[in-house]
Image 1 (cartoon, helix red, strand yellow):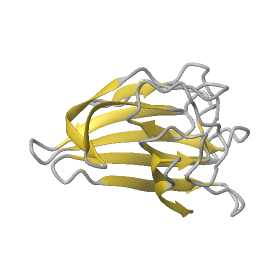
Image 2 (cartoon, one colour):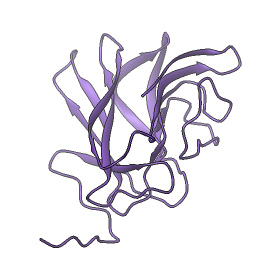
Image 3 (cartoon, rainbow, N blue to C red):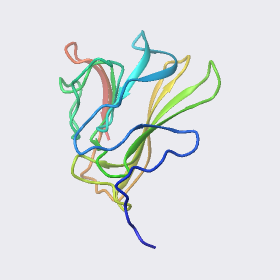
Image 4 (cartoon, rainbow, N blue to C red):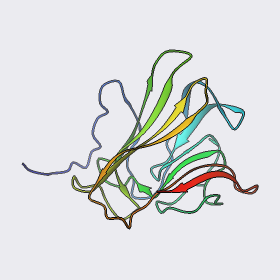
Length: 178
């Protein structure tokens, strides 16, 4: 068994769409369309963008981009109207974000899948150290799920900050450490 890594991100699996490729520094995807009307804190959103640092934001006009390290919410470094898995680092050649919508209207789920990520901006996923997380938007209920799918190789010193930031100035957020 050999372990060689390509400098080209892997192709998306069937019926999944590649949303974002890795980068040495934090970056945003282009604006993406939600395949259904989604209400975030009572406001209908039709698009989002996602970062390789673990943040999905409905503020598609923002230029503020969170770093790879985790921070406590609320934070001025995170755009308002965001769902966060702060502490992820999509810097390895195979660290991509994929999307897929499951189900039929009016009961669909739109999944954003951080595949083979590392924690922080210095630990590259390498086949021994990796983590897989998803952010899920649910039609009709407008629920948001943050899913820890699996990880391997990291000691207990590596954490993420999970939460939803509504407005950092008003200190509106939901947050937990993991």
